[in-house]
Image (cartoon, rainbow, N blue to C red; front, side):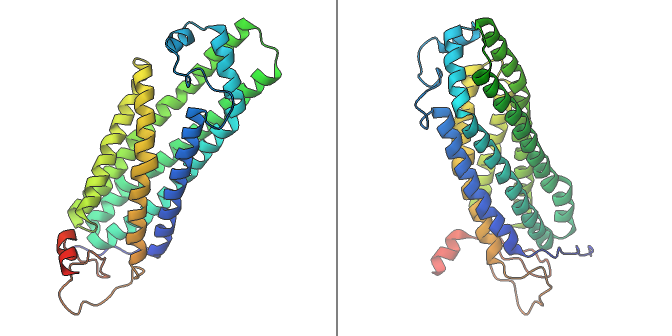
Length: 303
């Protein structure tokens, strides 16, 4: 017989509350990001938002008028850019709290096997993702605020504006790879959660399907970011699409699902004696017994 895992003293509800908050902040951060990318919040628009043919070619040729229009938009939208980045970073920390509670649930539900997978793969991957979000926020905040201040306060001639653009693109290139690695670790962490739930049958099968879809999109996002310097326009379109699908739609649903499940579990990891055969509820039993898969069709037929 395998030795029992010493349960955490954290109650389930704290992870559920963090899940709801993370879902809300992911949704709001995506709204701010879309407002920044679309330019709907400002009278001045970026040249890339006007969808004029040849804009990308003018940008790579360092057309001075286009660069000045671009920097005029960056200067007035810098606060919104930083707010969106800060909000999504906070969302990752709340997501980390929710994942830690979910890992506790997996450990009690699955014993030592889940304990090893949670501590070695599930939680560390989300820790790395949160750390990368902090680094990306730090780099982006420094580059955006300083460059916007320079453009507004300094008297820059045409050659200096070109130099500022080159420096800005080189500085922001660090964020491209950081975001790529964030997608990678995020996908690996979700894959670990998918594996644990598929093995121990704690949540619905449809939750596995949703998680698998997000994992696939995470690896598409990773490939898109690392290939951005070769296919810039295509990668930008893919990145915007993934932002809407993952942070605006799928992750809030995923987090609310986790939050409802965790809050529905009333026991705080205390042993509960078994007085009869386990019911097909998918709930976590106090003795760590493996519950049968939650069958949505069977539950609906009983209602």
